[in-house]
Length: 216
Image 1: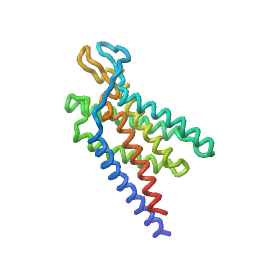
Image 2: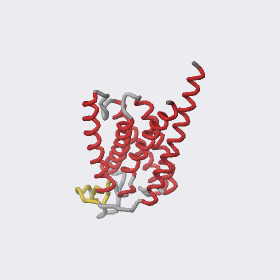
Image 3: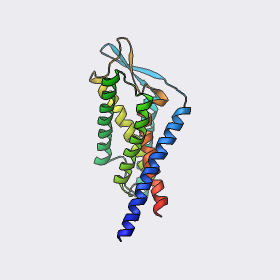
Image 4: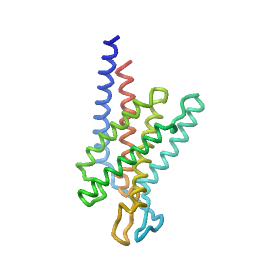
């Protein structure tokens, strides 16, 4: 009995480590070849600034979250499975990602005066996002299918980062020169609103996939 528990622990640990490697190399590799596309659309004026939303960096990720949410909830109801995208664990995870993002960008702004992560800082955010995805997948349990957990973690990352952008904007924490625009998802296809959701989703899904291969 002790041997089987130890064996499962080792396989779980191996799955965690491999999933973090998969997240780091796959996400960093894709980001290197991804074109730098951005398409900001002005929304409204706030104080002396214009607030805009980038189509690639924020609108499309949010739209994908909504679409995946409807699709997986509908599928779960048809199959009589646990309904995803609900419960204290899901919403608390969004809150935790929001707080993490506020702390991260607050630190970056205080130390460098910038609202953008350096390439060095971004490299460390990838495995951290992957680890959060893995922990969520472990905590979520096997009652929710792996693809639904991947979709949930994507939504958690996107919504958490987007909410942090909103908080920093409306609180006046993030400011730009008068006449300039604050753009939610301003990094376009390279923005963290999109990519932090990807980090979590890749970490969660790859962990579930690797663990199933190692255990069975």
